[in-house]
Structure formats: C-alpha cells, structure tokens
Length: 415
Figure 1: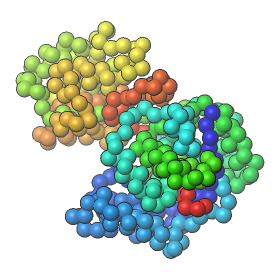
Figure 2: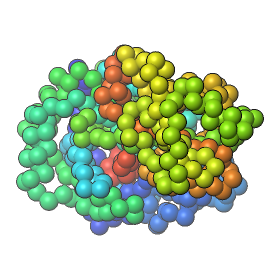
Figure 3: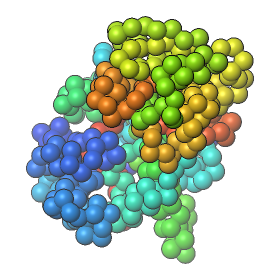
Figure 4: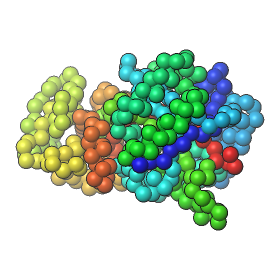
C-alpha cells in the first residue's frame, strides 16, 4: 500500500497559468531557458542562472539564493497563490489526439525508501544533490515527479466525474503543441475516497523524475532527523507527484548516435553486424523499427534494417529482452568498444520526440558516423523491471508529453 494525501497547492491564477508554466529544468540548457523565459515564467525559479550573465555557475550559492528570492517575489506579486484548503488535482495532457489524466498528489518519502515507490533507473549523486539543495532551500517541491500506477476503474470513475462536471480551471496549449488542462477536486468526499483507494494500490512507479524523487526523499529524512517530535504526518514527509494510470502512458523511442566505427571501415562494420543481425539495406528513405528486436541504422547516407538473430537475446530476462541491452551488448560493446554508456564521449542520446530526421542530420553533418533507432520500451517492460528490482540501462525511456512545471507547487514551509 502507498500513502498519499491532498495538499494546499501553490499555483498561478488562471490568466497567468500558460505563462508561468514552463518546461522542466532538465530538458533545456541555460541558454535555451534564457531565450524561452518570459517575465512570469517559472524558469526564473527552477533555472535562476538565467537572471545572471552567462559566466555564473548554475550551481553557485547566488543562483540557489536567487531561486528562493524569485519564488518569494512570484508569490508577493500574485503570480502564484496558495489554495485555502487541501485538494487533489487533475492534470490532463493531450498529444497527437491522445489524452492522459493524472492525479496531482503528495506522496510519502518513506514509501520511496521502503520500495513501495519503485524505480527503474540509477541516479547520479551530483544531480541528486542539486535537486536536494533546491527542495531544502525552497521548503517546497517546485516541480512534480511523474509516477504511474496499475489501472483502477474506481479511480478512473472519480476522474471522469470531475472532468465531466466542470470546465477546467486551466486550459492552454504550449508552444510545442501539447494541450494542458487542470481541475481542482473540491468535493471533500472525493478527496477522501482517493486517499482510501490509493491505500490499496500495491506500488507506484517512477516514470520520469528519479533525481527529484530521490532528492525529495532525502530532504524528508533530513527534516525527520532534525525534529525530535517527528510523528510521520508532517508536511515535509510528502512530496509532489502527478500519477497516471499505466494504460494511458506511452513511452517513445530513445535513440543513439556514435562518433566513429572504432577503426573499422564501413564494409568491415557491416560484416561484423552480420554475425548477430539480419542486415537489410533500405536505401535513402527513413526506416523506422517495426517490432521488438528490429533496429534502424543510418550510415553513410543509407538506412538499414537490423533484426537480431534468434539466440542473441533472452526474452525471459526482464533486462535481456530490452533492445537497449541487445544493442549495447551486440554492437556498442562488442563491435564499437563502448563499454560505459554513462561516461563514454563517443556516444550521444536523442529522444524520439525529435524524430529520426534528427539522427540523419547528426550523421550527415559529420558530427556523428552512425545512428541507431530503437523500438520503444513498453510500460509492461518498465513495470516488470521495477517489480523485479532491476535497473534499466541508461537512456532507455522517454515519456512525452513532459509535465509542465509551475502548474501547481507543494510547500512544506510550516503549512
């Protein structure tokens, strides 16, 4: 079972919602954030280095202090206001005609420590520390994490009732073409019922936001240790999440580009691939992987289909079945000599939202030598890996659309 609760959200008035809400801190660099940020954008809070010249380190104390100052100013100016009562909220996102409905809630840090909130990726200490400083300094979860849970028709029914009963408080389309809608659940009984139903959910799964989740849990632990009267129901025990039913989510491909062929000629490289794959030249037209264990490769102006041969993968192993594992073992490691995807400077990763044309451009420019496109991981694979305590290889999943930051914020500053 998991412990969740409603909360007094801090959020923009409807007329400012589209401007305040921003892309997450980790999907754009400082230069992009500086260019994208408008006057009221949350980017001034989550990437406060944009308020300095480009020479300031984004991890410097003055940047963290500026983030705190901006959060205070946004509240003083009325660009962010706190609700008077605790609520759950519904956050809907629409992409390419498909809508997913998440419940915005607070989750308990002890569920992350106990494994009731399950992860599928490792975190980097430096990134975790950065997010922890933000949470600690702000005494707030400024940005939500993205969770999923096993479908429950009773929860679906509550969401359907709220959505059908009233127009959303926010309804805007962001620059990327995705629609964002937001409802406040004001019915006390519905809020109580959501808490009760989630108590019977066996686990929540981190879809996106492993570093933010780990950082929030560490801050919760800190606060607990610093409070000799700790009970376990204090506001600092909880952190902000948007939680979606698994069936509504879609993972898109996460692809790879490599700078060189490890000293091999094109013909030698293709011959090596033939040991483990059925290799088919598809010509100049973009080729997209058609099924699990089928890969797309772009090399020297041509696209290829690579289909892994029987016996080169293990469909009974939750990690071995993943195409990122197959590609890493059979190509990146065995042929190209790339041993550590986290540290190698010879490889880069491209989210599928950019399209396969981005892979072609990176190779045609001469920056990269070869590109690989993968068939997307399924939600079932993600859940199987988390349930068995395994960890996915780096850069395996890409969820789209991303949650907008600033739609609602959770504070534990004495509230």
